[in-house]
Image (cartoon, rainbow, N blue to C red; front, side, top):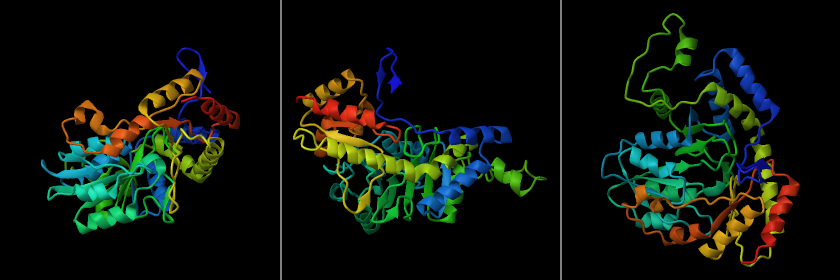
Amino acid sequence: MKPAKNGKEYIPVLKPSITEEEIASVIETMRSGWIGLGPKTEEFEKKFAEKVGAKFCVGLNSCTAALHLAMASLDLSPGDEVIVTPMTFVSTVHAVVYAGATPVFADIQSDTLNIDPEDVAAKITPRTKAIIGVDMAGHPIDLDELTNLAAANGLTLVEDAAHACGAMYKGRPGGSRPHLTCFSFHAVKNLTCGEGGAITCEHEWQDRWFREMRWLGISKDAWERTVEDLTYKWKYYVNRIGYKCHMNDLAAAIGLVQLKRLDELNKARREIVDRYRKGLSGLEWLTLPTERPYVQSSWHLFQVRLPEERIRDRFITHLTNNGIAPGVHYIPAFVHPCYRRYTAVCPVAATVWKQLVTLPLYPDLLPAEQEKIINIIRSFHP
């Protein structure tokens, strides 16, 4: 339970799971004298790449930065198009605009809420350069279909796995395939660094490019210069106009502990999902989320669906009045004022978002709190 501003306790929709081990790791790093981009970041990158089966991992300060760099790496020009889901946090779409391209919204599947490969295919034009798919709530996108679609049309596929740390698609973890995959280590993600992100890639030249671009285009960051040659540690070159978006060692110190705990944390999430499924079964007015048989969701979110917006809004009020803080993930990007100028023919997304509610889901959600949530939901009369 958390106290609200009005003093009333409530069950939050999302919450990090932090132990004394994460705290001790941060203290140790602070005492080391190296808290910026350094040895802990390098260690995290190597261990994360090993965990997900990626050849390379570049640590960043957010998944937004990862998406931005992914788009920047494509050398996009005004008039180029990137097909993207509207059912996402706005970072995904912002990254397209940051790079000077035009976002083209493809509709979503009604069950997984992921981008629909059929609608993607219908919206490819000669101007299309890339596809971004988002693993909504931790459920992987249709990677085989989208990979084949991208290859057949000479496009780049980018996977936004912000929700999907630890998820599996046909037995392989997210990040293990050759395409660029972007991860989030935000405060309430399955693996948190407090704030942070990463991009995984297949080729050494990509790894080098992303490392330079995260550090202002400088040829060698401070840690590389320190460990390689103490005599010439002051010497570097600026090869390109880059950004300032690297991970730091305080974030990596948290992330290294969280990485060790990731399987345990995701197992706890799945157990809570199983409890919800049992406790909320038989409610005809409530649709529970889907997990297709060939994937293993990381269950970042547990999204239920109500019959219509009016009932959904009453349901949210019912939960909040009883000390439960729900969420809505997401208002489609094309609804926001800054994206209304882009054409969006996405009837499923336009309908479904008005029915969605995200229930509390995090590893430290207590059994008594789970029972309270289930009982409060079952007491609702639509």
